[in-house]
Image (cartoon, rainbow, N blue to C red; front, side):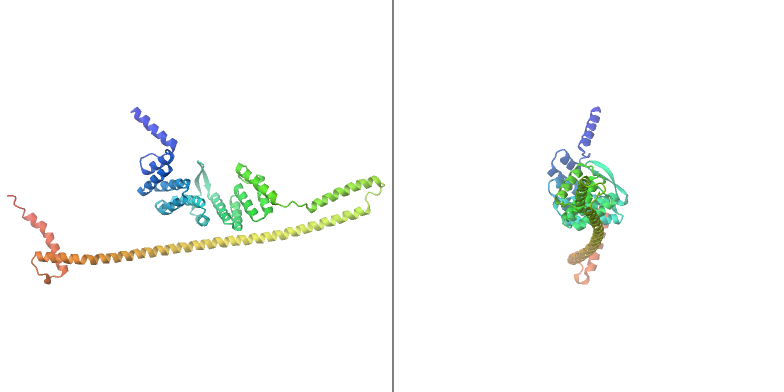
Length: 413
């Protein structure tokens, strides 16, 4: 008894250590092949058996997709999820979408990734994300944590912007990145936005975004990866930004020159002549240039800000129009799928009806032949009965036969 309990504890400890479920079904064998035997090919075979047998279809489908991705077979995983996701419960569809997005990234299918990300944003807009709950439990690197709808929206927008970056649609990527930063800012999306602005040769705007990370104003700025990437982007900006001497630097040099010259003149001239008239004129001219330069700078800043605002407004309107058009296309595709499904159902019904009619035509000669045989046995002329009457007589005779056998049992002796 004691040895049996010790063996049971050993088995439980084995399952805990290797994170293998208990049991002897195909799914358990698949996990054993994956985690204990380190045989991914064998695990895929057992995962297929589990799916076909209906043994934890949801878990088997997800785990098989992960193993296929590790074996560089993402296209097979995509087809498997598309084929068998209808057998999984509704609350598992969101996690299957997340796996599909990773598989699309692996395959380089950017267009499919964009469509799926927009679909997830639409579910959030309709309030169907997280199965109606305000938060969900996520897992990363073996750790569980809570994610809010706000954080999930910002994350999906960041992924959508990165997909636009892969399509070289930097304007759309910038708009989506800025929207994501407005919802839930972090250092990673800020660095991606900086990279997007560099691609548009807008180095000054990229430098402003990068400063927020370098000054630790955003969450995640202290992460080692973020610091390293910020340093790389900073070096790239330093290389690409022009280092021309400014007009203000010339003023500083002129001030130093005038002050030094005044000290020399004070040493040469009597105390009453502190500044020569020529230097007074130089000072007035310098002040006039400074005022003119300041006014010009203000005007340039005003027109530049106006141009930036107009350009940003155009980008926002373009992004909104593209988003609305994508929703329209999605609705049209859904309507088309519904119509195709209806046509398919009607076609199947028509084929079933034709098959039933053909089967009925095939059975009529057999019924007539049976009626002819029955009438011949009873000694009735075939021309006096219709096929229907022959069938009825045959049926009545067959029903009466067990009664005759019961009333007149066979004589055993």
